[in-house]
Image 1 (cartoon, helix red, strand yellow):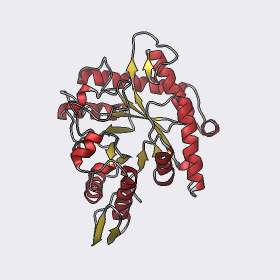
Image 2 (cartoon, rainbow, N blue to C red; image 1 turned 90 degrees about the horizontal axis):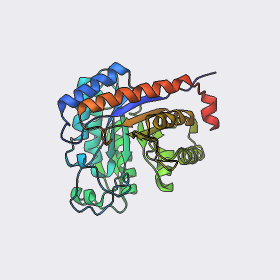
Image 3 (cartoon, one colour; image 1 turned 180 degrees about the vertical axis):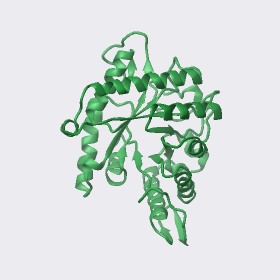
Image 4 (spheres, one colour; image 1 turned 135 degrees about the horizontal axis):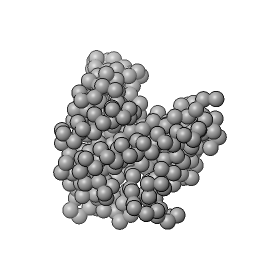
Length: 325
């Protein structure tokens, strides 16, 4: 019986005072030495002094201070493409912040430079301050993102390309630059509402949840797969990639603790439970952990989480079990 393996990825230190070429290179080298599957960057444009939108990942709505200094995600991907040879490189990108014609070229370039190792996590954005800064209305961002993805798909799959939509227009043109991966790099999406979950079911290769209890993840992913089947897609082809914000505490936390927060034993139990849920990959974000203050701390925590994730393989989980969960 086929055993289910959960791949392991990490986010890179792109925020805060230590973010720079040396830190990125050290993390990239360790990731490849460990055998990690992927490295990921994210997109944060502003750190408003008086934010109009609360940060959804924090109970009090406040942005983590490291966001005040943010390296550009696409520039980092190009750097990682040259600095690595095996690990996949991925980016969480707000589609609504970018012209899709320019973005399609940038991402194709990165896939070519990395020899086909690019993964993509697309979102629609949540910060009204950032929408104001890029000159795009926040209202209708879901429809704008879908159309942007249609433009990108057309550029990647067709030649010549012509597009006429509500938000974007491309006069008939040749685009000989295409991604190495066919028909395109894998696309994952975060989704927490019926409309965004429908977008995953119809358009994406997989779902990128974060911060959800395991029971909620199980129920929501089942709903996404059901809608994918109703849309004529193979539901088991959708991947579940869980983003884990590891928050270590010296003593165990209570039953109402967030997932991946608590003692080392509690976090390791969450990793095993995520594997048993059927996750294809777990991406650890350690940069914002309270006890991680330097690049050396990041490297140490990566090794610790890698060991914990590999220990979870001592408990066999079959493909049939994950499909039944």
